[in-house]
Length: 418
Ligand code: UD1
View 1 (cartoon, rainbow, N blue to C red):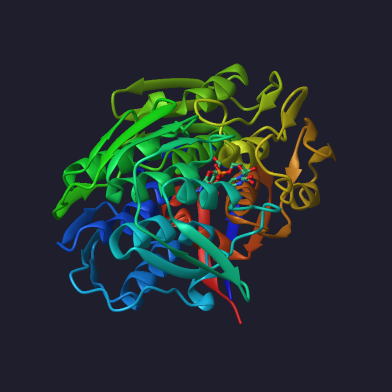
View 2: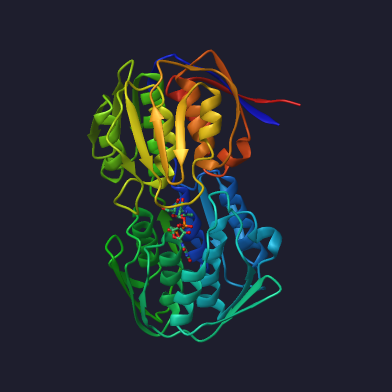
């Protein structure tokens, strides 16, 4: 079993390069299926979620190599159009294969995706978007069967789901005619996916706004692409410095994508400065509580940053209210933060963090990906030693959390324990 040992309350000082974005690389790897020609993807972070995605690509018949941070996918001969339950269970984003397989093969068979740690995560919008394009969707024995000749259509989303927007984009690329997705998700990772599709020769416009237009049916070719930096990993490291105190410099990340989080940290008393591709933060000894933080689709405050920012605000002078609007069950880290001495009360979607003068090192366990990272952030601001288990969750989204925090000056080591 792997364990982080973290010695807290040492102000940080250091610099770290931000890894490639998990939420970009996963749909981009699915999209490599769209053309039979080879795609070369750079800046792929070493994540278990990426490994699982590559396992699915191999299962479908792709040639896959991964050297350094570059993945090469050769999807010339697909030998299969179904994904077994064991591979689907590993992560939620495997549902994006639905759109990619329909586009390339005209059919797809898979089971409901895994990753329900945040409460119920339905895929009704994904399925109805594909049906709008002409796919027939059937369910039997827990498996989904989708098939059909796709034609461009208007897809109006009832909410701006990230995954559904991606699924609709990938299938629409193969649909003859024009597809318009309205109320599309506006996340930067959608823009990254559009940019990748453009390198393959697709005609996709509007990503980053609420209306995305795709002129489908073009013959695509292979391409080479570099994945954007992970804004949530950057938020985690800013929160780490805010929690421990001291200063840190993040390289290779666009500050404009983090402005909702940096404005909260500034309000809490940190000094944040940016150049076009670096962000530096200086944190005081004690932060203050801030105005209510409400999670929302981009460009609002990201739900994925809620836990790490909450961890940084446990020791504030004053209280902070959080309202989680995106997922039903996203306060599972709170009980673990309380083990370190945090005073947090939750009621449904609301959590109130009453700042305490100090946190104490404790034995804590990751409850989910960002919740686990939040415990590391809190431990950096806690007196004494903490041990953090359940690192499997963290490895899904952080290529080297311990190494990166150590580069920022944290006293953290990863150990194998029996
Ligand atoms: C993506 C991100 C995840 C992030 C989330 C919200 C990836 C791989 N994951 O997840 O890190 O936390 O966006 O920013 O990119 N919903 C439905 N029906 C559907 C689809 C979604 O009701 O068919 C609901 C969900 O339950 C949720 C909300 O829509 O309440 C937003 O979910 P969505 O944007 O789809 O999140 P994901 O794409 O799963």
